[in-house]
Every structure is written in structure tokens, then in C-alpha cells.
Length: 300
Image (cartoon, rainbow, N blue to C red):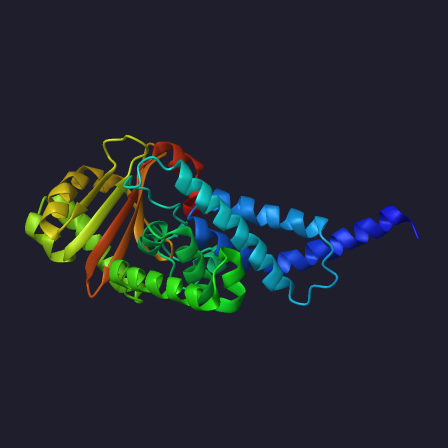
């Protein structure tokens, strides 16, 4: 048998098996890193390692690949933590933007489990080991005894890390209203009040403890964190001028908008709506990062 033909056959079989797991691996990496490009890089590196490794003795390929991706993401998080000069800098994770009438099938696995931007912001605040334990166990049902070796902890210590992360997530990332129509009603009311300059109407659609996070890029004046309904409402009055440029969209599967003027995206705004009020508004206004997003999906 031609050796090169055998190599091609092995590569084809491996590639087919890898594709079966790609969507899940990308979902793991996105939750770990909050970056679409870095998630894709981690998945690609996992493929290269699979191709270079003899996995004939691996019984659970999905578990093996998940471990590889998780370790790559953990290393990336630790590198990011060492490089971060200002830990308080506002950074909104990469949003996944879809048409207002539904999520693209390719995005469904990425957005399973309601992984909203507000949740990803909270995950960004976790220590790398905490994030790994929480994401793998709570979102992907990986047993603690399989997670523990990745962070060089005992299974019991890993369980404690996940529990601590879970408490922080529950306290700072409320579960959104599952009814998309009710979410959209609140978002529409927000922009209607902003357009009309109606301060009290804005306060009404905002939770008293609402938080607005805006990421305009490093050192930008639009990079702020605001707390409280009246403070956020005062800022939102300035959004009235944007009303003609607001395009309804789904942002990480929840009601949101993309602001586009003269064909150029100005911001992506994600809303977390609970009990008929917005409890979080996350805004990406960094021109460089907006340019890298696939916003053409809105026109498909």
C-alpha cells in the first residue's frame, strides 16, 4: 500500500471525527476566553495536536479534545492575566450578533445555555482556575476528577473553586427572561424613551440596580461603568440621537441592537432583561473590534 495514501486516509478519518466535535469545542473555548478569534485559534491548535498525536488508545475522543482545548484556554487566560496592566479596565467580550428573527444555525451550539454578554463579563472577572472549573463542570458536565489534573488541584478543591465561581455568577449575572418578545418590548421602550427625551420613562424600564458597561477600546472616553437607574437613564438620554440608526438584532441570543450609520457600525448593545426591566446593558463601541465582527449576518 502506498504510504502517502495511508497518511491521506488517516488524515481524512481524523478530520471527519474532529468535525463531529468542532462545535462543542468552539463553545467551550468561547466561554473560557470570551473571544471568537482566540476560541477559533484554540480549536485549530487542538486539531493540529490531534493530527500529530497517536490517539489509537484514546477511548473517549470528545473528552480528550475537550481537555486539550481547556488546557490551551487556561494557558491563554494565565498569559492574559500576566499582561493585564489595569485589572479594572472595562472589556466587553466578543458578542455573537444574529438577525432579530433568529440565530444562525452555526451559532446555536456557541450560544447554548444562554451564554449572554453579562455572564461572560462576570466570567472574565474570575481567576483562570475558577473559570475553568465552572465552565467545564457547570456548562459541559465534565466531572471534577477530570478537571482537577488540569489545574493541579484535588477533585475536592476543584469542586470548591466551581462553587465559589457559581456564587459570583449568580450574584452578578441574573438569568435573563426566557421570553424573547418580552425582552424586545423592554429594549424598544428604552430607545423610544431615549428618542423622546423622557427621563422618567427610561427610569421605569431600568432595574434600580442596573449596570451599564461600555467598552470603547483602550483609553477611550466611551469606556465607562455606570450603576443605578437614574445614572444610566441620564446617560441614555444621549442615545436619542442614535435612534434613526438602531437596528434590532439578537446579541448572544438575547434582544439587543446594532447601531449603524452610513454603513459603519458604531456599537453593539446587549440587554439583560429580567422581570420586565433591564438589569444590565453591555456596549461594545471599540471601532477596531467592531470592524472584525461579522455584522453582515444582519443583511442575510
